[in-house]
Structure formats: structure tokens, C-alpha cells
Amino acid sequence: MNDLVRNITRRSFLELTGLAAAGFGISGCASTSRYYGYSAGIGKTQQITGRSTVVLGKSNDRRQAAYNALKPLQTDVAKAIGEKQVVIKVNAGFPTEGHRIHSTYPYQIQGILDFLREFYDGDVWIAEGVGSSKTNNMYDGYELYGYLPIADEFQGITFVDANGTPLARKWIRQWRQFPTPIDIISMYFEPDKYIISAARLKTHNAAVATYSLKNIVMGSPVGNYKGSLSQKGKMHGGSREAGSSGRELNYNLFTLALDGVYPDLAVVDGVTGIEGNGPWDGEEVQHDICVASTDFVACDRICTEIMGIDPFYMKYVEWCGDAGLGNWDINNIKVTGARLEDNIIKYKLHKNFEGQVAWIHENFDK
Image: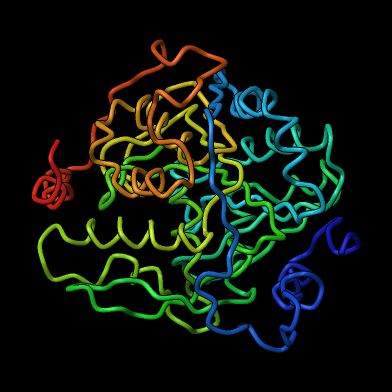
């Protein structure tokens, strides 16, 4: 694997998508198959007890902000990684020049690797799959966004087209509660992977806002790949009822998180966040912050706070907290690093916000 990492070429990148036998499969999986069966309930699982720590790294330098947010977590992260394969899942599924400002910047990845290389010398996969682009080739996105030089600076880096890796069949809910199958990228929930979510602070067009969890869960349905259409749209429920896309999306994000599709380490870049018509059409806001935690629920709860968003509307994260996947109650979250109160900026929400949350007002008391 290391020989493929150094001085990566277009051909060697494309060959990585066929490396199931070299680490993408699990025991009993035929290397010639992208599927290993119906797998609901066999993913990783966690129950977080006690208080969670969330670190606010303050800097207008993305690389430094990420490192500052991660450094206090080193002992816990090193212990959790153990012998697992480290995967940095970036947010870059729509690789176009116009979406550069909405995607993971290479400097955030460098900051994460600065942190990791102080105690971990194993291979690191940088992963993403195209949701939609002219070529549907993730290599083009890695090249466009300036990721490839990272492999020259750090040894042991593999760029992975996640859409070309093994899949698993799971079930989610569609409009009027009909179940539907969806093919999920297996590595995002396998117990032998340590998943780092390199996300952004962004408003959203159906779920109000997106942070560390949604970067992983919405990245997990297989996207456009070799002529196959993306399945990501299934997450919205195929709804014909006004405003219910957000309802089905919230439920399905929560459902897949229960199956183990969630980050082990959350790193949310807010040096510039995205407000307004996010996630792919909003405008940048200078915020000079990075949020990190080994508890993705606590991380996303604090992200909600620093964007000035009422947590009442972040149902998919709240439900994860209710299920014990992390701490949603802010009284059970210890914020260190920069002061929370000094770093709150009220973001302008999506133009269809009222429609997004109508189902929440109809079903929950505030």
C-alpha cells in the first residue's frame, strides 16, 4: 500500500478503487464483489457516559486552527485508534470551482495530519465519493481542490474514491414511511476503521445545518460511479409533501447513525463558515474557529451554539444524543480552548428555513 501512496498518479489513483483485498473488505468478503450482504445492526456502536470535551481552536489559519482544536484530545484519540485504519472523510462531493469555498480546504487536512503524525505513523486514507460532477471521478476533485500535494508532504497517504469501495445494503424510510433499500459505503461504519470527519460549519437546505455527523452519513450512500446513479437523494425520502424532505432526512440521518455510520473524531472547520443557502450555494462568514471532539454529538451541539441556531431545530443530532451516541445536553459538555461565549455568530439561515422546520413545530413542543 505504501508504494501506491508516494508520488501518486492518475492511473494509480484509479487502481485504488479495486483494492478490496488490500484492506477495503472484511472477513468472508469476496474481493471480486462490492457487497457483503444485508448488514443492518453489524456496524460499530458506542455509548458515551459522563461529560464530553469539545475544544474550540482559535485561529484565522485553517491548519493551525485544526491543530489547536485537536491537540488537547491527543491521549484519547491515540488510545481509540489503536490498530484501526484511519480514514479522513472530507466534504468535497461536488467538485467544481464554484463549490471550492463550500468544501473541505486542504489546510484543514494538513492540520489534522500535523496532529496525527505526532503519535501515529500508520497509513491514512483520505476519502470522498462524487455526488455529482462532469466526470464522476473523485480524482478530479482531489486535484481541483489541491489535495494531492498532501501526499508529498506526509508519508503514508492514500486517496480513495469511496464510491468504488465495498458497499452494504441498509434500509431507510421514504415518504409516507415506506421502507427502501440503500447501498452504503461500508468503511464508514466498520469497527476496524477510525473515521475522522473533516467537515465545515454550514447551513443546509433541508436539515437546517450540517456539521460532523452529516458529513459522514450523507457521504455514505454510494454516489455517481461508472454509470450508476447516485443514491444520496433517497435520504430525502422522495417526498411530495411540502417541507417533509427535512423530516425524512432527519430520520434517515439518525437511522444510519444507529447502524454505526458516524465519525469517531469530529473536526469542524469554521475559520470561514457558510451561511444562507448552504450547503452548496451559501456565502462565507469569517469565524476564525475550529471545533473538535471525540463525541460527535457534543461537537455538533456546540457547532449549533456558535452559529446562533436554536438547538430545537437540530432533531437528527438531538435524537443521536437521546440514543446514547453522545452528549446533547450542554450541561454534560465541557468546552475548552477558546471561550464559547466569545465566538458566537448568528448565521443567516437558508431561505426556506420556515418550510424546513414546519414538521418540527407540528410534532414537538418547544
